[in-house]
Image 1 (cartoon, helix red, strand yellow):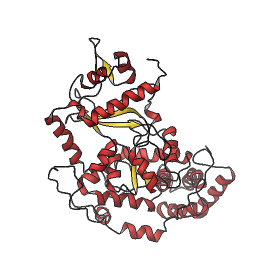
Image 2 (image 1 turned 120 degrees about the vertical axis):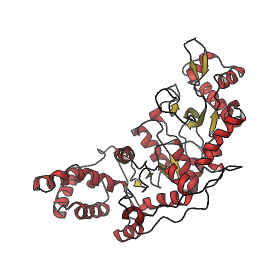
Image 3 (image 1 turned 60 degrees about the vertical axis):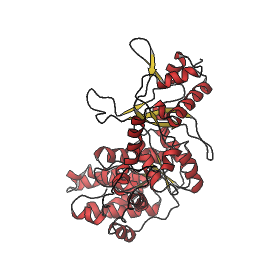
Length: 416
């Protein structure tokens, strides 16, 4: 097979996706039960699960490779596609075994579906990720049709196609389960996307921006230090792609998948809805000032902090920049006149947090007023539904009480 024969590679991946979903990869009933139990535990709706074409790779060495050989594909083709793996005995076996299979599709224009170009497999081994155990996630290797940093899990899928038609907002998350959780929570309003196995790249940011035209992007990271750092790192990439992203609040130690599984879809949907009052730039500005916190008691430190945030402010629509300056002055004790001087200087110098990577139209959405934000912060998440949507023959699940913003704040666990 020629290395440039993309049509053959697309066809092989399409056959693999069908094999993983239509026969659960040739798995035995006990293995299928383990797979479905994991999906049920996470509260993923049947509709979402089906539309993302999630499948299962059986714990067999040759289930898929034997199937594809039966369709006429050679071992050379199995290796080039990344679906096969050569052993030390020079035999070709399945790359993915005993894994929940998430198909990665290529981005596509509105109204079209993408090609399946690779897979990301989540191990069902409870010890996955530990020393001597299989990796928690295993992704397709680089092939002529797939590179990790060039594709976004969730784009080119049926939920994205439906979401764009309905005017839903894409939500950037970290994990594959998070993508399904976001879409399950409120498919008419949100659909999830994730870089999948890599930090967000500029190319991926442009793909997400193309999917989000006119609707904005919400960033909903894992609520830990690494997740918060990833959200901050995503900001300049999304700005370079022309997006003013918002930031969904969460519960410390939880990711969106956890919120759905533990508290139900209403809680996750409320977290996403709260993003409209939380522009991600506020977190970026706060983080930038915090780097100077040990020097803010001196005039030089305050000047340095003001100069550091000025290019970020200069990239914002004027009304938004003024509101953010008021917030910085209130939260960090910075002089408003100092912030305004540095902001105007940055504007004059052409300062831009995204390096003027391209032209941009300011966001047309109405910015939230401080009064609205305060009202939201004082309101608890609504109670979850009595039980998350289940697959057929559900396992008994009891949703935990939904967290309240006010309760978390009172206990010192601030929603970020």
